[in-house]
Length: 432
Image (cartoon, rainbow, N blue to C red; front, top):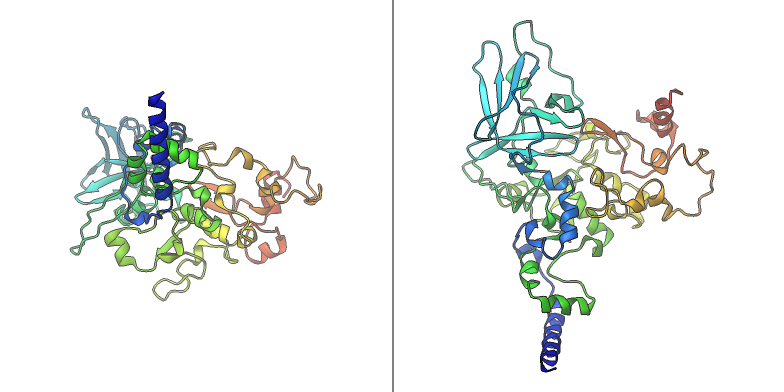
């Protein structure tokens, strides 16, 4: 009996301490990161659902578990240059490039990027990581040249017995340290030094828990105490040591996703490259960066990003989902956020769409009183997405839905040189 009384007193004292702690607002910019594995013990189901996502494998070390491509000695010849992909007896992965009248180049694959539609590969040269020109297309189980993934003409074919210049072959070889690092990792810091070298660091390769929930060292440390966890549970209040995107305002929740799903530029590039991206979940993204739009200038060039958008400003490329959302009337009225349709934990990993948002369900949650025949289509022949978020966005070897929710207007779209929703459907059906 005495033990129960002591336990009750302990819980009571801890509850008072936790109650005081709950009123202490944290500055998460000062927090430390511990990695996703630290949360597995207490958040096992959440950890498991995250492990199934493609976000986890945004960047990974080149191990047998992570490398999806067939590095079995097969080759890919592109415009006279032959790439051979192999694995040695030590388990290392290699790409070897040969061309007529040129010395061969061989590089070790040290990291992978992506695991959904295609997987890219990184090599390292001293302090610089760079993306290689050959990727693995997952659906077709084949290697492809990265030039295939971009909507630009291939270089001219070289004369017989010759090869394309390596400058054209390496057209999409990109430095990872100050490019890919920002959207494919947790707490990215290029670490650009005054001498031009990099000391790049990340808290975790890939998109882990802390990319969306903020630095979690304090959360993990304090909640190892079971009495605190129980007292916190009894309080019914959120734990201030961690960020829950669903408790944020719609705008701030959109910023968590838009940090990576909305191409942007830093207001001050130097600190970004020297010290990293200061954004933590809960921040206003606009305080340090601005999303790119059709009229965003770059160094005085007012047309720098024009080709990435349709003439009405609608994004025509992936990784501009935030821009589409911001241009939508639903968002302008404060009625919609990314989390209304997407979830990291409660959705199919392919597109992270919630079960409750599949089909027309996401739209019907707000537009429940529409006339049954307002679209003049049978419900089984067209969805809300087909008309209001048509597939006019290119990326990752496919056409994707626009994230700008709008009313279909074929005449307007024709004037803007943009495919309209009606034509997209009826051409696919063989009617146009």
